[in-house]
Length: 330
Image: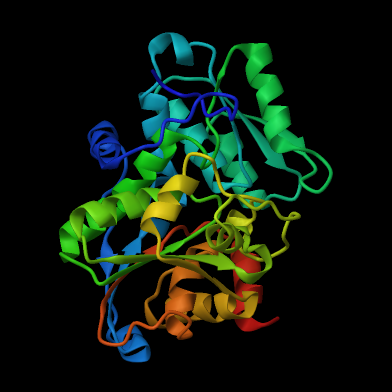
């Protein structure tokens, strides 16, 4: 039985077997993204770094994996009335496109200040967009209401077992390609990518330490891991627009507690500098959220000298004008 993702339902905590099942479902749909290396990056970190380039994934972010898997896992009667999701951008695009590919109607609840490029892409994939004010309205409540009214399946961006399992396929592919890692560093927003990555890493590379990275302004995951319970914070403000949830998910927090060694933070300035590095030295565009893990390694926040380190670059969806302004300081 598939959980629609509503918090009122009993928890179904995903396992590594769910990650393997997700890989089978998304085969031939999600890209097997490349693993990039850079001698300059290695020298800077004093380690051997492997970058999983999910900025080159379909819809420009890892989110396509979980979105496609969650829709594909639905029973036919559950998807007949469509799916509802809420997202600031990458999950929105992923659900819209994955739903289009599977012939399922999609409705996306997006904040009014979401990047215009992400809204345009979501609409372009055929989804209906409903806007809300992220500082005064509750996106979960709005989405719950729409799903009830339409009899649609709710697929949240991170608090859903099939979403978590789908996201874990990125780390699964990374470790299959690189072999055992000493350290895996993963961006953290709501926790779906980090939880799924931890499931894969701990199963495939038992000695691998898994660390999550959040924006300094939104360290709810760090607080939660250290306190031992989910901590909710006010809506944070950061250029890492894909990592601004106010709390991690009920489905992923038990995995974070069990399999993640630590959660650290980086500043917006460090994210901008990391974006610049990728553009100048590796010739790729990585959005601010996608730079979280790399920024922590590049700035020595995570000691990794002499280690084999996997780094997930979670996405590349950033408005070009905004990107240029950030990296040039204009």
